[in-house]
Length: 136
Image: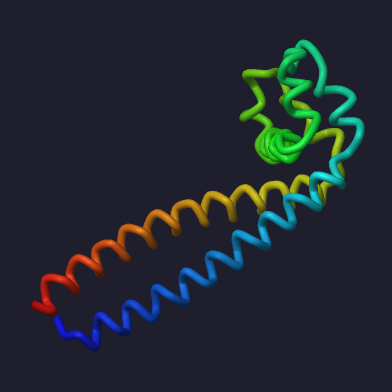
């Protein structure tokens, strides 16, 4: 393998990293917007005992954990079976269809970013090691 190939792959990895960074930032921005658009009916019905203990309610009410609560509800809205343990299987009935679709898209994008991030790190480390081997 030549040094030019390593430079080409390194350039592609750089652009992939920039794309992933922009994707993560855009996803975080959409999650923050979704936090403020969370329907009140969902919080009024499910963000209380027996679904959440009092300590959890206090923890997920203020910053920095309130957006985490939104993500938990987004997952239960997008995939109702994931809320079975807490009994939140009908939250998707309380939200508009667009909220359910956006929740599903955000979760998929987040999972894909995580998987691509792991691949990006593994390939980057492999390229770095191979470059050290072939440059000697």
